[in-house]
Structures are given as structure tokens and as C-alpha cells.
Length: 418
Image (cartoon, rainbow, N blue to C red; front, side, top):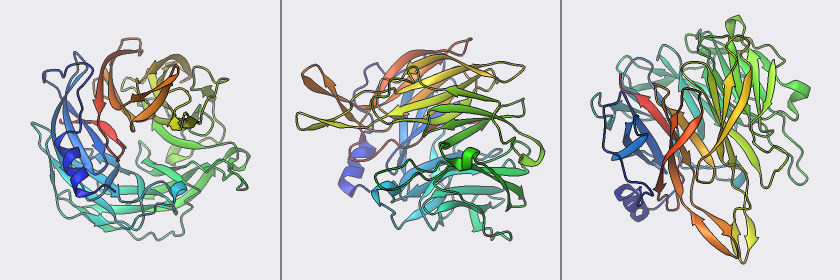
């Protein structure tokens, strides 16, 4: 958490002097939001020049963890917490799911009803395809809850699960319902071995889903989940395929999706996400994944942010911080790596595409020190914007520096206004 003085400074000036000038607002059917701590800031986008224009900020009850738009109404749902990484032992004691109303003209946000209290830090949340239910994933203890969304868009009560206990795996990181809305997949990352602590296995936990009720359907966990650390998934818009980023192995897996949300247990394709998979300089971790709206490309974030001691300072030793671009074969769904686009910052935790698929924005998490010759330089947190070409490749456009202070730029995303 940050104190009131730091929060006031953060809200007053989230963005430092950009390396490229802010664009003038142009007509758009979407806006962009990015969070720093509890502050969620609106940006108008200019798709033609891949530019951003900062507008206003709303402050949530805690640090923003994840955000999801209602599928058919202009409401945004935000999971917040004063907790942090379980590896640091920061559980927190204040966790909420809030509804925000989106102004249809400007994208400005206002609180919509009281927030719902959650029992633990939410690491991810999403809505089902009807917008009638919010599903919230937790990493510690690992699991998922379901909450009703009322007819007026406010957050309702938690749905008691008749089929409890649900199999929450180890270190859940994402919960998504399938395109048919008849199943849900909980992505559980597991943990690498550390010191005397052995590896925790990862898995894709499968559930049936109906009327807010989840029931265990199975688990995809090759070799018992050892050497398998999935983080996020996305669905192909027209093929029955699921694309899964494997954080702990820097891989992209592709699975066939059967009826009622069952996944074939064996992936049909496995690909490296790194440009240099044999040159690991610090902890590498595959992250967010998004399939292009046209289904011809898939994008995966590569993150590295470890530090080593240099001249009494903790500096980044090097690694890949980029967006991996894969071309998708239209008949088989096979992805082929065609580019790794540098994000000009350290640790791109989130990125997103605008609804037209012509612009991408990547958000790095916080400022870092990097060795430069015999000295050290500061690399600020940033928002890096890209044009998306007809071939799916990214062309760097702007680098907007973000002053995160003691907080983190933890979530960002494009949101359609229509």
C-alpha cells in the first residue's frame, strides 16, 4: 500500500515527461486504462498514430489486480487488494470486487454500487459470456469463487457452490469461461523448486459451469504437472483451440477444445516464446496471451526482471522483455514465431490490442536500474505503443514514461465503448 501523500502525488501526475509527445485525441471506439497501485487512469487512443492521451483517474479501495468489462453493458469490474505476492508473505486484509460505470462518450469511470468483500487477494477475475456472473481466481489459497452480477450491473452475493470442494490446484493465475459458456478453466501455475522446497506442479483445472455453479470435470497436468507451469490462456475466435502461455517454461501450448469444455490432454503444438531460449540471463517468465481478433496471430509477453548486485546497487542483468508474435496457420492452428518486439522497458506484465487489432499497448510494471558500461542508468516504467501490421508484426510507435513511485503498474487493457 502507499500513503495518502504518495497517492495524491500519483493521481496528480502518473505520467512523467514522455519520450515522444502525447498524441491529439482522434476518433476511436475504444479507450485504454492502466493502473498504478489503486489508481486506474483513462487514456484516449489514436489508432492511426498509435498514440495515447491521458484523461482522468479514479482511485479504487486497494491496489488494482485485474479488470474485466461486461460483455453487453458499459460496466467495468475491478478486483483489488492491499495484499501482494505470496512469495513475499504479503497477504493483506482488504480485498474487494467493485463495479464501475463507463461513460459511453468519454470512457470516464464512476463507482457503481458498493464493492463486494472478498476473502483473499484476487489475482484474476472475468465474467461469463452472459454477464450474469463474475468468476474470481485466488493464488493463496488457490481457488475460485463465483459472484452474481445484478440486473443493474452492481456486484451481488457470492454463489454458494453445491459441488464443493472445488479443485483449486496450486497458485491459480487465471479463470476463464469457454466460448460456449458451459465450462470454465482455472489456470494454475504451480511453483518452481526453491532452496529445500520442491517444485509445486501446475495444471489446467476443468469445471462444468451452469447458473453460476462450478463442478470438477478434470485436470490437464502432463507428468503430474511437474515441468508444467501455465499462466494464462486465450481462445481462438473461430477454431476450437485454446492457446496457453507456460510461465515457468517460456512455452506456448495449443490444445483442442471439445464440447462441454473438455480439453484434449495432450497439446497439438508446443513452441518457444523467447527469441533466444538458450540464453537465459535472469528469471524468464512467459505472461499474458492474446489472440488477434482476426484469429491469424497470437501474442505472448516475455518478462525478465531479476536483479544482481553491481557497485552496491541492484541492477537488471539482462533478459528478454518483449512481445512474442506468432502467425497462426488458418487450417491447423499451428503458431509460428515471427517476431519478438522489444517493449523498451522491464517486465511487461500486461498488454492489449484495440478492437480493430491495429494497435497494441504494453505496460511495464515499474522502474528498474540497468548497467550501462561502467555505470548504471534508470529505465522507467512505461507504456509502449505499437502499430500492428497486416502481417501481424509490431512496429514500435511511442514510449510513454510512467512514474509509479512505490507502487506498480499492475494491469492495463483496451476497453470497447460500443
